[in-house]
Length: 65
Length: 173
Image (cartoon, rainbow over all chains, first blue to last red; front, side, top):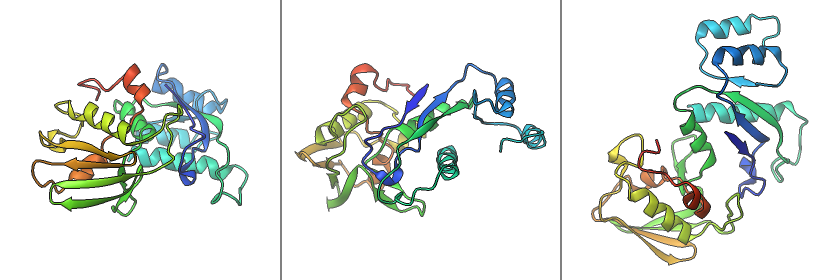
């Protein structure tokens, strides 16, 4: 699922800040967490982590929070 | 909740970038790509609410405010007149007007349960939409409906192209 910014949106106060948002649910959450931690930009955001997983990411060498 | 979370995330990214003093007057061009893995089973719903706009919505203080509408007036206890915002175009260039509001009304009200939250959000059978002019519609309800505006706030305003190519389907949720 790819969302493209509407550059002609009528309400400039709420204009999109990001040009494209890609939802890639072909990856598992586990794979996604590793990709977020790698900071390579392949995945920027992963949701629905358990508190324990969140803590592990936060305590990793370069927490991308 | 998730809608808010995504909203603040986007805001956060914007604040990380170079500051733009003209932000209030002119929106900076959108930039960059955000890649997300969201396995939440309601992922489709958060996306839908980000993509489609509504005639009215609740603001952060819980007050009903116009969006694609510019205002509304109860002409009597079962007739609601809504003025539509002029000059709004869908992303594909289609004009937003009374005709497309009527199309959305018809495509929503023909379903037994257009909203995930329950049939209590349906309009009463016999509720009608009349086009007054290009930028005005009038809703007529068979009996007084105190939450009519709340229900309208749930009705996604999609383009003509959306209905030609996809549409909601009875169980879109």
